[in-house]
Image 1 (cartoon, rainbow, N blue to C red):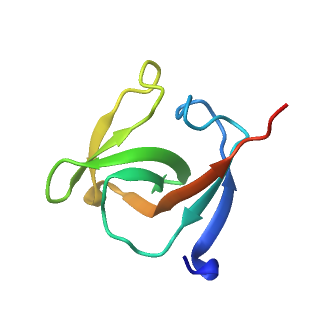
Image 2: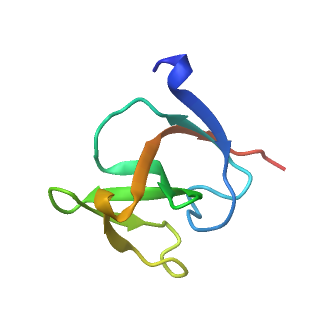
Length: 96
């Protein structure tokens, strides 16, 4: 990983529980890697979101929250205004 292409972000919300919880820190590799399955930070409008992405077609992806009871998966394309910011490559959680 190139240090200049890494970003450290704090998670807010419960959409990715139990994998990621509010307050966790994530390290995001923003180097272009193309569209592939995995945990990513995406931009939808003005919002940054952490979601699992799964390719379901040439330009179609499924956007998945781990907390599926409250946040069901949906389908999107890059033409829908969804931008892939980077891949989550590390996280940490403070033990209390």
